[in-house]
Image (cartoon, rainbow, N blue to C red):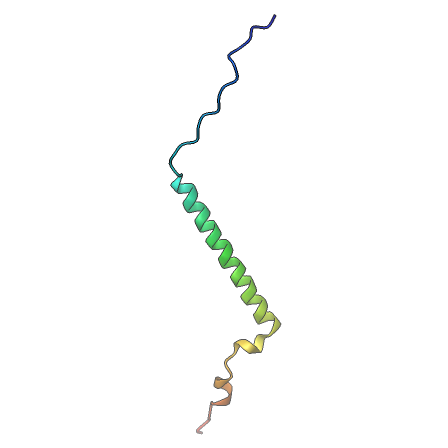
Length: 66
């Protein structure tokens, strides 16, 4: 017969503190993902309509005094 080992171990409880490094890493990662999504949307808008990004006042109100 195989000797019965110790009974099933009870899972150790999770620590009560929050891992600050993990939280900071996740917060920075979420911020970078949000920034990336905003930049993709902005670049897509410029590619679809490039002339809307140029202010029209620079073209219409520029007078040459020569």
